[in-house]
Length: 311
Image 1 (cartoon, helix red, strand yellow):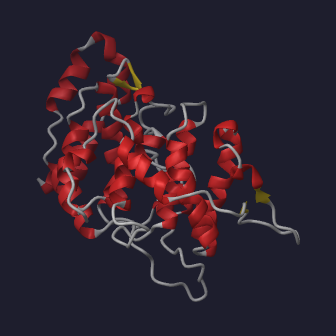
Image 2 (cartoon, one colour; image 1 turned 180 degrees about the horizontal axis):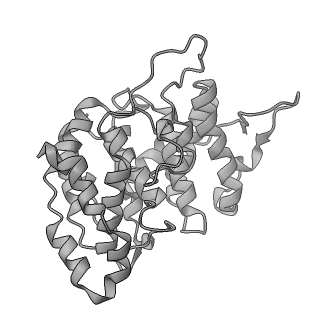
């Protein structure tokens, strides 16, 4: 990877997508000439999305969701297609520049799913030299955008309960673990744990518990999380990420690893050093956080069972 300031990958509330990286991506990916077509169709005539050829700012979030779903599921089920790749690259930086809307989180989650389907190889060659760095500094920092933090300090989770990790947060954590260089995993995770927001840390705690099957290597793909998994870490169409993006299923080709082994091990080493004692004490002794303490009951012990043995 080209030399860069590694602090660009740190997570800091309010520091969303990197402006210069967004500009590079916009310059690298002009609008395709032909409209994008759907992936799933049964009729003789294939539907297209000609509205994408116009002003994206004039489209609602609900108009943009369907083509993103087609890109994510098309690539994972039918294999690579230049048409979907070109449109994905064009949409990626421009959708990250949109003003916040009611479905901004869903769009960001779908962009992450689409990226993983279009670029399943974490170290594969990108369309331009800084592409992976720029993706990590833009899409990988969207979860730090100012509008997702109340008063700049409290993460505005949309999970139904703390035991269900916020979907955008989960997608963003997996995105970083998948595409960072192994040497950048530890400093990035340390920046994650350094964010002083108890609700944020509770979400991280439940994500670590829920993500353990894939972090431990018990499963290898997001689609393999068992149905009814008590600590949900799925996100928009993550179940389509099965590891085979060739379009060839008979016989199936070898799966593309979701997480590189060196990244997974770097994450486990860093997680094993996490000390939750102060966080747990703060939650349990603050009268205003009794609801949080109730939802977290037993979580710290479960975390220790899963990870402390690696310390």
